Length: 115
Image (cartoon, one colour):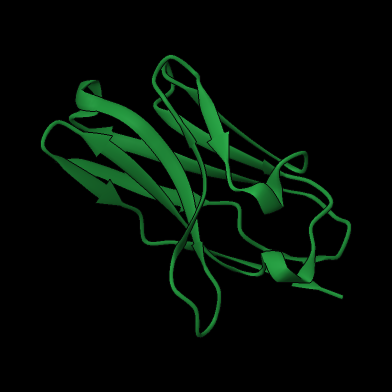
């Protein structure tokens, strides 16, 4: 099993920045791809960005150029740097880790962007 704990969510004004962190523990050597997802009120959870163990990243179109995903394998931590935040970025952000035959999710951290 892999356990994930997110942190860094907050209330911020439009145009501001936040950095989310996700600390992994447990069978961390099995972790391959990690990612950030978000869920806005009344909407389905959606992919924001992913990153492989080697550092290759992908982003959903509406965050490209504003968000940066990174991971520190030595610290077992995943990050999401979010710049130029918009009200439509509001939601609960979840960390995800793919490992072996399964995947794990964190409990989520709330990001609220006011206009």
